[in-house]
Image 1: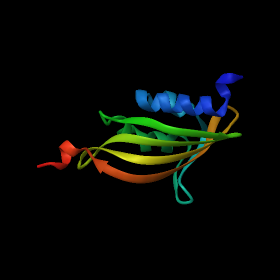
Image 2 (image 1 turned 90 degrees about the horizontal axis):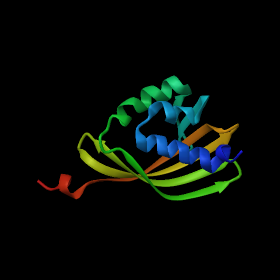
Image 3 (image 1 turned 120 degrees about the vertical axis):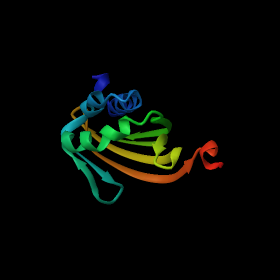
Image 4 (image 1 turned 60 degrees about the horizontal axis):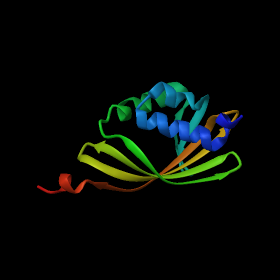
Length: 126
């Protein structure tokens, strides 16, 4: 079924993220899905943890992820994105590497690496 192809699931997840639709975003994850830092600590396990982690993020007025590249190898999807965020210091962007494992039409595991963050030039100037 085309809508359960790994790349389609990840695109649904990205679209829900950019729409700030928390329920639709959670719907792309398995109920017991896990999120990690890349090669590191567990960030969230299950929808309750993910909802708690993302509620404030989805409230950010400028939140938006721009896809730079996507690679698919079987059920693994790797996205490179630039994410616009509202940091405590002001509006800015952060580079992200996102590695998703999709099974049965939903994300089972996700790992994230944060790259360089940068405040918007207009925020950095006095």
